[in-house]
Image (cartoon, rainbow, N blue to C red; front, side):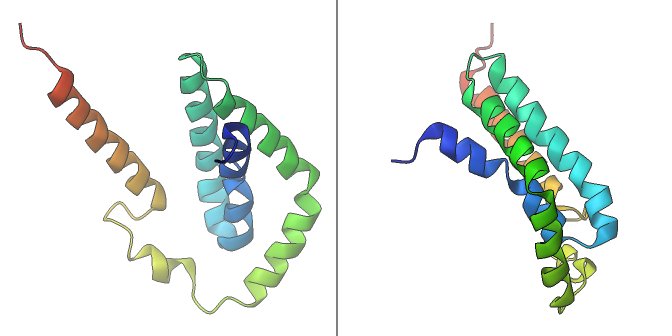
Length: 122
């Protein structure tokens, strides 16, 4: 079984994935959103006294800063080998046109289902 802190730490390294793989325009467009979503997720869990997500985010954020030079070198390699622009695969994402809409839609749907199950009508 994987350690919860290790999982959160690795999950929060999504920042590196965005920097390496997205076009420069989409890095500027989505990286702040990724960082915000990961931080918000950590903060939400913190208020529920679950500390691993915010600790994992903080460690991964520090890791990303420490290894930014390597990330940019990897980005140069990945971007030089690209066959398709972001717009090609973004067309396959739901109508809102970004990967984060999938996450938001799934969270919203899950919350609605939970409300239906647990909401007691008076």
